[in-house]
Amino acid sequence: MVLTVFLHMSRVFYHGAYKPPREFNWVVGVILLLLTLLLSFTGYLLPWDQLALWAVTVGTNMAGFVPVIGAQVKFALLGGVEVTAGTLLRWYVLHVLFLPFIIVIFLAVHFWRVRKDGGISGPL
Image (cartoon, rainbow, N blue to C red; front, side, top):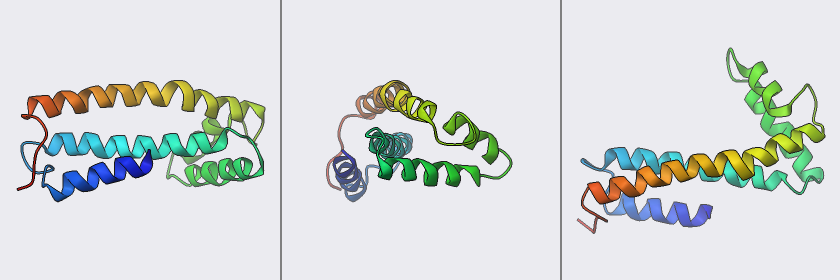
């Protein structure tokens, strides 16, 4: 999925489809790329083995270093002060419910903008 999104964005960049009037759709596409990477990360954690445990630890520690709100973000992602079974449930809900819902909304906007801007752009 990540490779497919990257190849699609490479094609769009090569064809210059990020230029006006399609620049808003490029931004939506970049957001979709970031959401795809986040979906990939949350899916990596679902087996709940040692790799997943340490990935959650590293990921939440990185979020904890965000200025001003880092500690609150880390607490919200962990569901407490340490990695527990509640943490797995939070990441599972994020992966299965929340992220797909957000991605569907952004995909709808992305497809709508493609249609509104005159369809798929070709090479310049």
